[in-house]
Length: 319
Ligand SMILES: Cc1cc2nc3c(=O)[nH]c(=O)nc-3n(C[C@H](O)[C@H](O)[C@H](O)COP(=O)(O)OP(=O)(O)OC[C@H]3O[C@@H](n4cnc5c(N)ncnc54)[C@H](O)[C@@H]3O)c2cc1C
View 1 (tube, rainbow, N blue to C red):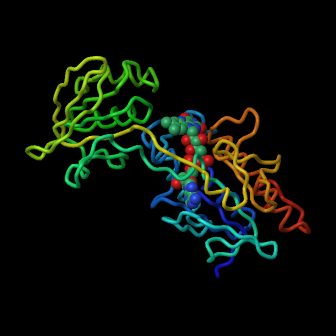
View 2 (cartoon, rainbow, N blue to C red):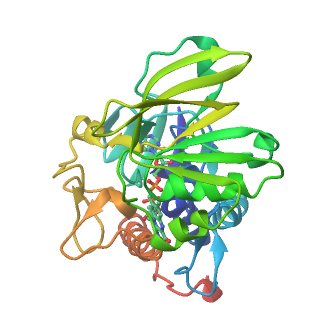
View 3 (cartoon, helix red, strand yellow):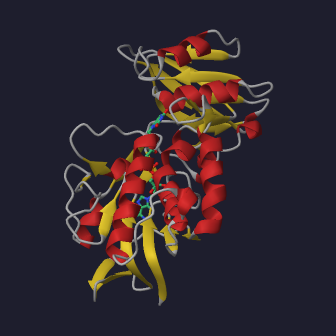
């Protein structure tokens, strides 16, 4: 079995920062991520968005923030991707993870939880499925195409803007309500783009493949009118299902999909900590910067517990 001082579960922004801060304190760390890539919500849901509230950056794209955190963390921890942590058992004041790893302490940084996209609500075969995207990782592959973007939140608006910026694209943004849930400024931007048409309130009712294009029947809400629209590919941004129920199997208490923690970010199980969006306490706000601070509190608490004989050095410059 492989041995580590610390296991971090979840490689979103907060898990990644945790790995870097744990390394500064000399902790031998392993980090598990259930998906094939790190980055959590910023990487999956809003990679192109400029984030304005990360200290010391007046503006940084979500993608760039994750790249920076990942670059540092790669040297500082052992990464295990495509690994959804299933079991944690306590034995002799240590923890055994998935019967393969022995660790002295654990930080849960699973955010909103293991997530999967809400699917396009029509039955599709394999050929059609290939033209349906739930994430946009390489917007340039959509150049010179007719694209349908389905959804009304920030991700749908961000992806529509990003795809509209690619050469030769024509975008239809389709939402079942008249009003979008996302930022008003993004809606305004889209309204002013010549290659973007906004279709509200419409719902997809039928889909078929003809001449290598998707032919989608769109029903106007509140009427029986159906129009047909042709797309080379579509992007579906109906949100994600996520849950953290799995932590209950580990003996960790969960309240409304969140973990309650002490002032040192410790859960009900001594030695298991939680940070980032998975955590709840009065007045907590789901922001990356706050998660970074929680990571520092948790790592400092782990250092005090694992190495009580050491004087805890707080500042990185003195470590
Ligand atoms: C559209 C949108 C815009 C936002 N804009 C901002 C903003 O401008 N500024 C800001 O500060 N915040 C913003 N946020 C909030 C911010 O994204 C979150 O606060 C942040 O992502 C929380 O980070 P995290 O690392 O705790 O969790 P997450 O980002 O959710 O990452 C958790 C990771 O854990 C993994 N995981 C889950 N379960 C397991 C398991 N069992 N085993 C292994 N891995 C697992 C997941 O796959 C995921 O990669 C925004 C959120 C959204 C949705």
